[in-house]
Amino acid sequence: MGRLTSDERRRIFLAQQQSAGEVLAPARAAPVALEYVAPRPRRRLLTAGMIVMLLSGGWVASHPVELHLPASIVEALMPQVE
Image (cartoon, rainbow, N blue to C red; front, side, top):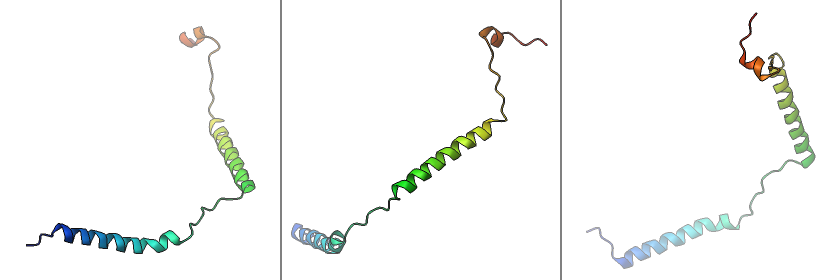
């Protein structure tokens, strides 16, 4: 009991396919909304502003850090005697 014949399984499958097609039909017919794209001049200005902010932020963060590179390899390898 509870077993379906192959004809019954086929009818159930076809009914499910038909009902799924009816549910999806209005969605297929509806127009597809386009993604909003900012106008090009505003996008370029925003990009330029972000680049300037990142560069200036890096400069401000690295400005207090002093980096003294050795003038030669010998100076780098020899310990500083003071």
